[in-house]
Length: 506
Ligand SMILES: Nc1nc2c(ncn2[C@@H]2O[C@H](COP(=O)(O)OP(=O)(O)OP(=O)(O)O)[C@@H](O)[C@H]2O)c(=O)[nH]1
Ligand SMILES: [Mg+2]
Image (cartoon, rainbow, N blue to C red; front, top):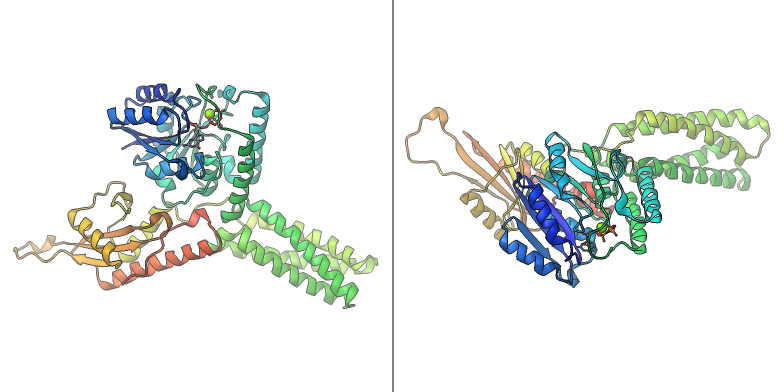
């Protein structure tokens, strides 16, 4: 299937019939499915159920009031996770987003974009749908804030848009935790380095019904920004760097005062002690916060950061020695020297360290996992099958259908909780030796969060089947990925690395 359109709805009875009609008309040429995630208490649910009954391309997930925690954001995440299309499009159900734009967005994705945004701020776009000037102002301001905080958000002129489309495998394996309405921002920050294309949006006023946007959304937006800064490794890098630098300066000056003025250490010794303390402080914090993603990758770029920090120390020392003869108070000398050192550090780091983030493995999420496992076990093919045996991802290529044997092994691996290795029994038939090949299969259970019940299938069709060494290699790789995941959980939710963690198997 080419496309899944996800539409979150809450009390949109006056809009969905026309929306479905317009979607059908504009997507006539495309194999698509239309997935409503509905939290309605009015007639919307009935209308959607009826539509789904008549048209097999339409499906609805209705969430009962107790399952609506998170509202719009969890609705969209649920829909995206269920999407079966190669591309997934998210749009509002209140006719603010014209479905007629989707074919153009699909064309852009086919031309190579990972993510296509229908922007309200591109030349040729309109934002009449925003209504009052005050809402426009707020929207502009919020967009400005997002783009200032996150370099990744600058990939789009409208990072807070509600109408976008992306390759489905861009989001597989990522665990989104948006708060509030801004799913696209979450996507941009969690998939740095993706190729973003934009089309101008004619943003319409809402059709029938009421807006669900309230003042509370503003508060949710701030919470969302904070969670993206806190939980996504390496996000808002420049700001983290600056904050750490300032805190380190505070430590340096305080230590200088304590050691030099209070304890009466000789000036140079006091400076050396204070500098060592602040260097340690800065390094630890920068590795944990500013460069958390590079640390996880064990990136050689980190050496750049450390060199630059030491270089800045040398500059500070020279400046401090020079200032010794001015007779200024120790702390003031330390401050001036530190500012000089920090300036050097900033300039050098800017050159040496990568400030834009990229996803560590180029196919992201599950695909990266499968690729690594396939490589470790020397498999020809790898697939991730969900709890209901649905194919969540496969490597290489997109088409994988489990055979009967695989389905059988999948079940057995589930019941036993153990990894299974299997090879076709040799046939009794005489065979031409040159082309003899056997099918060999490994199934490994995987559990963690949304992946609970999922299993990895590794396949090989060659003259030699998998050996126990291959199985061991795959298990080790799985454990490594699991440990990375556990570390990630311990350091609190970095969405870019929520990978599978294995069960203790075998
Ligand atoms: N499933 C679900 N959908 C929601 C929820 N809240 C809003 N929506 C849908 O999300 C889309 C956007 O909501 P709107 O109320 O239009 O928000 P908005 O576009 O920012 O506000 P307006 O410009 O006033 O329309 C609409 O399709 C809503 O039906 C919710 O809690 N659950
Ligand atoms: Mg709306």
